[in-house]
Length: 160
Image (cartoon, rainbow, N blue to C red; front, side, top):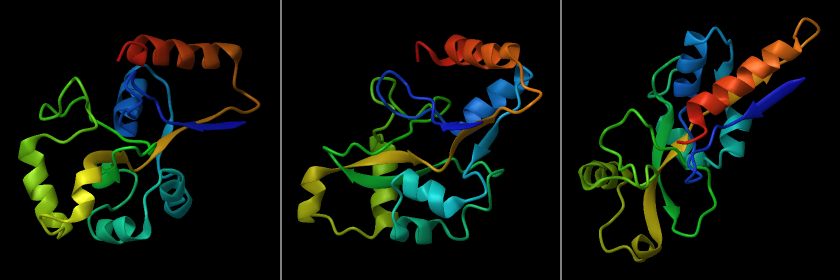
């Protein structure tokens, strides 16, 4: 079977799939991460729209680059999956999905959004993950393999 998922923090924001990949590899656990060789379907699942995908063109080269999230605007009441990179010191521990004031100005500049736009009142800047984690279990997989993965996820991410 194949299991595809994002690891979530207590706040509901997604942990970077690259963080999960790197930490699991150190534990001897092999996972597939990224857009799973199907970016169109992955980005659709993650709620990334066509304009945002077009903006990524030329920036993201594949699943093995270091671009693991996209900074976009979302409605304040949005249930979209968002991501705050734990290793990014500019993000607040209280709400890692929200941008700091240092990040907002460059993001507004890149967005070409006119200041004073009515939609700004109901929007906020968030990090949206550009991929997920995939676990494949097959004929040679054992209960111990699954137990090792579950133990790794609990020990590494349970209280984050």
